[in-house]
Length: 224
Image 1: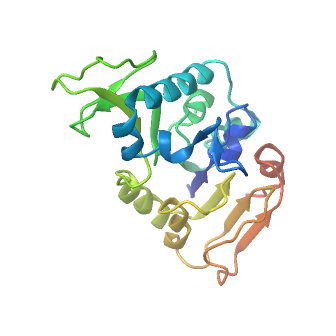
Image 2: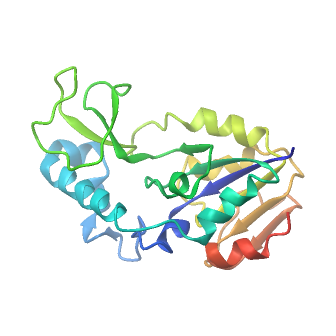
């Protein structure tokens, strides 16, 4: 069975009603990104950061996977499918995808402020004073700007072993995730689905096909 590795970004979740991380004005839900997605922002105003992610977690309960998420689940009937996502929602899991790697963390998990490996499932709001087993404040299990991406090595391993790569709903501008496209064996087919102009980091690869459509429309053009 051939292996398909899929890299997804904000574009696939946007069609379910989840706000994209970067808007044209550089704000995310009217917040400067560095205020709510950096260690410095956390140190300066942890209550603001917690409230921000509490709202995102509540919003997640109100949205559903879309047809592009379900398309990836259906691919498992024909291929081994590994989804690598930059998104922190759980829409891939709710659509039924069996192998999902979250590069940038997960909204429905929290971790100790001090111990990166002390991670808990978490459905409700996080409050100041909610502590991990080690006595440290709980924080969102989100990879913020300037932090290491712990699942990157696993993602590279999966891409290196892929027969086909799909890139859906990401501008390939956020690193290190954007560099994953470099690790598929040269000549293997790569399909990039995004309605916006995408700068593909490896334009010399002869088997890259760009589909300038939304995620839900673009997956219908795939002939795998």
